[in-house]
Amino acid sequence: MLIISTFIAVGLIGLSIFWTRFKIEKESKKIELKIKLPQPSYRSETSIEEALKRRRSIREYEDKPLTIKHVSQLFWAAQGVTKPDPWLRAGGFKTAPSAGATYPLEVYMVVKKGGVEGLEPGIYHYLPKTHEIELIKRGDYSKELRKAALDQEYVEAAPVNMVITAIYERTTGRYGDRGIRYVHMEVGHVGENIYLQCVSLGLGCVVIGAFHDDQVKEILGVDEAPLYIIPIGFRKS
Ligand SMILES: Cc1cc2nc3c(=O)[nH]c(=O)nc-3n(C[C@H](O)[C@H](O)[C@H](O)COP(=O)(O)O)c2cc1C
Image (cartoon, rainbow, N blue to C red):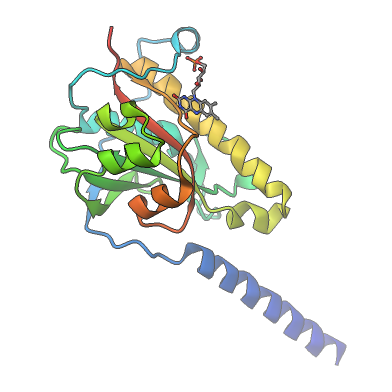
């Protein structure tokens, strides 16, 4: 009797874990198009020390488009998989640390009209496992994003804006309420990765925390918590 009850209990626990994960991961995005990104580069003429020394928040950009190579490098710096592991939901360990390797963050890029050579304007979502992006919304949302970001004009001026969101349950599911602070720490790591990658690419960026969450969520069309908007463009010298 005890053995049967134990089996039932273990089965119910397993089922509830599966259901929770399914609920969290359920895809709500409509995918318009998937694009394989070029292989990121692992070499640079900028040393890590030089990147740290030169890192600054940049709010003025050249009127010049980025290339798909920049897009690839920026997404990789933010959340690229650097050590594949089939046992992890995220597909492996990434460029930024994560509490318990729970990887609660999602990364998007809002591309302005003419913002990236050969890429139509729209909102793209990064798929770290395969280093691909998926177009989830067509159109230029830079004006709407600027409004959502309390009218900070560099949001509209930048050719692209990365947006980092969180799915808290991935981390709080393991750590309870303390997981909230872990998620906020993690987005800081990702922000710094993007800053340093920008220096190495001759780009400039600024992390933005002042915005209306509900408006950013509506622009992206996802039910995730936006944590950072990061306008990026060629640094004005
Ligand atoms: C959590 C956080 C939120 C920020 N939010 C904004 C923002 O909304 N708008 C902005 O222009 N800069 C924002 N910044 C950038 C800071 O203003 C900037 O880092 C600071 O002035 C120091 O300059 P530095 O980054 O060039 O060293 C933010 C920085 C952090 C860490």
